[in-house]
Length: 293
Image 1 (cartoon, rainbow, N blue to C red):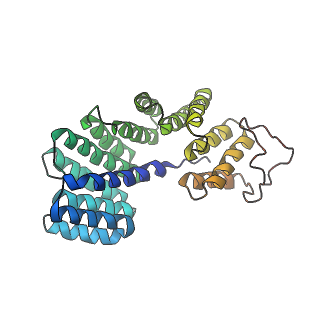
Image 2: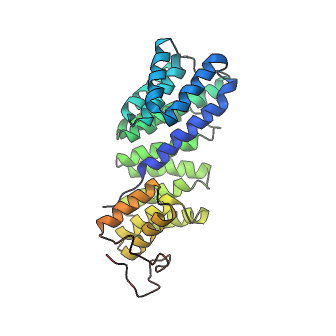
Image 3: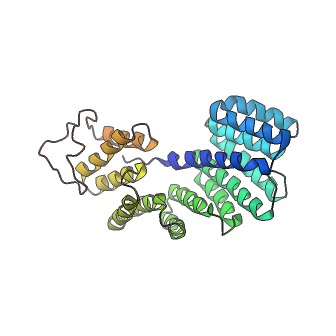
């Protein structure tokens, strides 16, 4: 069985968006409300249950959408992904109708509205509800300003929901749009390779991975996906090389956990394999010693 690290990109998205809001909010939400929001958000990262209690109490005092947003992120921190997604969709719905969150100029509001819909979509993916994720992310793409760099994130995330639905052709179209907007976004190459592998277009998948490795030779998900592709096309030694390299270079990553699961399914003695350099990039052995299984 081949596994991919579907949560890595999504969890990073939540982390990055939380940081962006915290950085932007002093000019949008000021005074005691701003301080209360900052305090609540800080607990979502360190003590999510405490954040949930604080956010619920704030909501009871008519804390509005900022309180609801903190509550949603507290759910994420506790792996209550469906609750988080539903709350975020509700917040985005109120924002669309003119509910106050971080109001400044109209263009910025559209970008923030898209971000909240995007977070809802990410949470639905984590809740393994790809159809609901697709709906939220389509809403995000419908309102995000075309000038915003965040449109790339929404294309990539919607592609993930489409892949979960098995619609790899449409996922490729979203990823192509993201790739055209920013040719240096390595995730677009990796995710396109994964979609093409599922469609058994192996040569095209390999070409996408070459593009990824031109950007970075150490990218975690690129190593995982190249191992997936190699195993599926019969290059078992090459697959083991990529997965063990991933484990040794990034042992605590989500991608490494998927690689370990793949190797264990093959009964590979991970700790006993001494030869990370025994296989070159084409998967051909450099030495005669075989990995112990």
